[in-house]
Every structure is written in C-alpha cells, then in structure tokens.
Image (cartoon, rainbow, N blue to C red; front, side, top):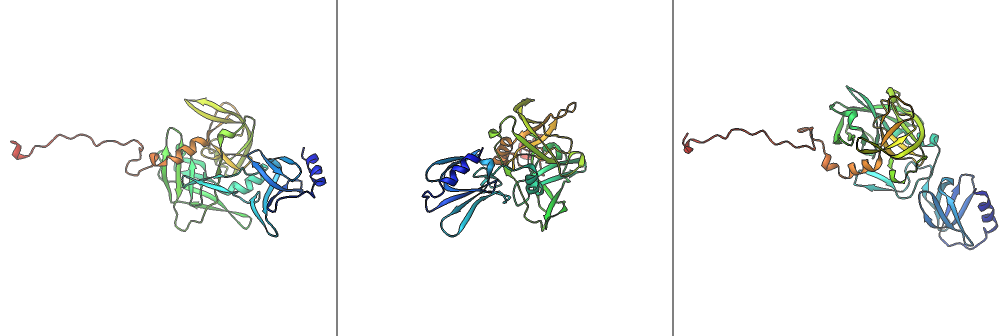
Length: 323
C-alpha cells in the first residue's frame, strides 16, 4: 500500500522543505523527509512540501530530526527504549508509540526484563519495570512466602548469563487484584533492563499479542496469540482473554503487544480448554503502582492493608482508687 505514495514522493522530492525536518526511514529501505504534522499509535502524518502523506506506524523503522549537517535521532527501532516518561517515580510509558515489530525482534529486545520468580512453594514469572530492580508478579505466586528468589537472564556480548538474586523484598501487595510489587535488593546488583507499560484501553479485539514466561518451569518460553476479548468478566473483575497459551508457571509474566509494551499480566486459564488464557489489564497494574503506598507490605503486619487494633485488656485500678 505504500508503493504509490513512495513513487509520488520521488516525483516531488525537489519541493521546498523547512530548514528543520524529520527523516522517516521505512521498512523497505526507502525514506521520507518532511515535517511531522501529527503522530499517534497507528500513523504519522507528514508534510513533504507539495502534499501530505499518511504513513502507517508499522511501516516506520526510524525517525530522525535533521537541522543541517548533523542528524539527531529522536526515535529508533533499534533502541530498547524509545522516548519515555516516568510515571509515579517507578514505571515508564512511551511518549510516542514505539514501532510495530515482529515477535522475534521483540523477544530478543525484551527477554532480559522477564524473570522467573521462585519460592519454596513453587514458581512463577515476573517482569522488571525499572532499572533499580522493581518487578511485578502475581500475588498468588508469593502468597504466604517470604523466601523469594528471582532468576534474571543478563545479556553479555550476545550470550545469556543466568543470575539468581536471593535478596528479594516484598514492597506492596493487593490480594484481591492478584498483583505484587517486589524489589531485587542484592548488594552489587547491576542496573536492570526493563519494560514499558502500555495502554490496555487502546487494544483492539483480534490484535496480536505474545507472552513470555516459565510455564511448568520451562523458562523463557514464548507463546503468541490474539486478544479474544478485552472485557471478560470473572468473579466481578474484567480480564483480557487471549489465545496465547498460558500454563502454570506463566503466572505473573507479561503479555506484550507488538510494540513491545506490557498490556497485561498473565494469571490464569481454563483448565479444561486450550487457547483460553486470561490476563490482568495493565490499567489495573498502573492503578496499583500509582497508589502503592495504600498497598504497602509490612513485615510487622503482613496482612496489610488491613490494620488490626490490639486486643482489649481488663482495666487495672490503682490503690488510690480503693483496691
């Protein structure tokens, strides 16, 4: 669909352009130079001087700004993180929609941020949300446990190096939303690769998604599918339903869109069927993180956010009172 527009561009390439313009690199190795008029998740509208082109975001590999002899990249598909904004001081979202990529590219880019969460009672999955080692998993993965370890696969010169972190702290929990916030606190821990949180409200039914996790302990397993519905009601809450295969051990892992953003936490499936997996929408995760102080975990009272008063005791009367 892009070919006629590109031919038209070649004919009009000698038109006048502003001194500062953007260079848009396309997947077919061609490029467009012009002024970006508007940009959203799905398309970029560019003024090339004589006409305006409407370019699907999925065809764009890179956008660079040029103001003379030195171009300055502003968005690049080869960068693990596009221009981002920090939210609530703990997670990041993209300022502009990242380009759509195929699953193979995204797994290579994002796999390091997906972890395996282990406890004496079992294991699950999780994903790191910032460089300081904060990570999200399901509450039921760590329920009743305080001895938690996290396995991370660091990339070192193209090779994966498995590292287990033992000092993992519970920061906040919401039992009813099945979400937990943990932090890797090992001394000497490096800065961690992390993911961007997307917008589950922007999802479309039928949109392609994929999950990374440790089903049945098979770490770094990738499954692909579509969004079957955005509003599956289960026990009073709404879930994303997906055909991406989900099994025990996937719990707490990320469900990604093809822009590499987390749009849900995989947490359950229908046991008697296949292709019937469910994920907590990322909107619920953002709410939890934005209000994490209300869900803060306390070693003195692990049942938080419930706070219990001390039991009543019989009043003791002093001798001056007549006893």
